[in-house]
Length: 114
Ligand code: HEC
Ligand code: HEC
Ligand code: HEC
Image (cartoon, rainbow, N blue to C red; front, side):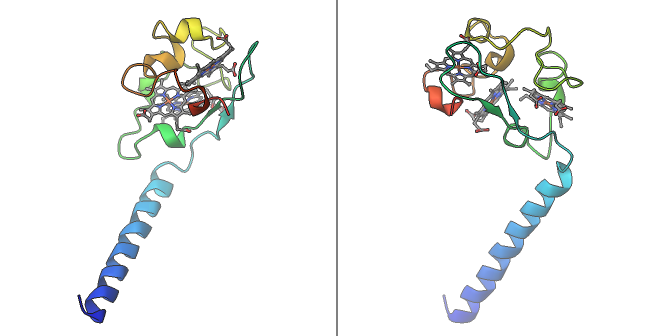
């Protein structure tokens, strides 16, 4: 590649990156802020849930989680109001509707507890 072609390629890559950022910001700028769950007994560290990291801006799929798993009118509340427990998640409830099936499971604690 000569210098002009290299520079042109740089501009194209930069423009694509800017467009991607604009699309994300434009599509999902009203999402709730990250939520830190209140640690239960013996929790090895605080768990933060991020809408940003759970949504595809092209198809947000709010109904994958609401209202079946989590309430929207109350911060951090599960569908039936019970606290998040591994015993429930291991049976496919709460975060366990996906984690442990498709999404990463519960073996590596610090994937969630930090
Ligand atoms: C992967 C699961 C998941 C998806 C998908 C999801 N949410 Fe949530 N949502 C949660 C969880 C977990 C909570 C509880 C933590 C919290 O309160 O932020 C929550 C809480 C909320 C709350 C209450 C939080 C607050 O600060 O008031 C609102 C409102 C909400 N979601 C809206 C949405 C909307 C709108 C979408 C789609 C654009 C969406 N959610 C998609 C899991 C999800
Ligand atoms: C609708 C399915 C779904 C639900 C419900 C869900 N997740 Fe996830 N989560 C995913 C997927 C998919 C990823 C991407 C990583 C992967 O594919 O393994 C992810 C990634 C994450 C990550 C890594 C990214 C980050 O934000 O640091 C954390 C932590 C996480 N989830 C925590 C949770 C917690 C806590 C809950 C319950 C409050 C939850 N998730 C509920 C599907 C889900
Ligand atoms: C997919 C995310 C995720 C992973 C991975 C995970 N946890 Fe949790 N865990 C949670 C959430 C969400 C809570 C509820 C908030 C809290 O108590 O901090 C929780 C709560 C807990 C609790 C208190 C409530 C209960 O069910 O007893 C303990 C103890 C716990 N986790 C231990 C662990 C250990 C040990 C590991 C690794 C072997 C682990 N967790 C991996 C998400 C996860």
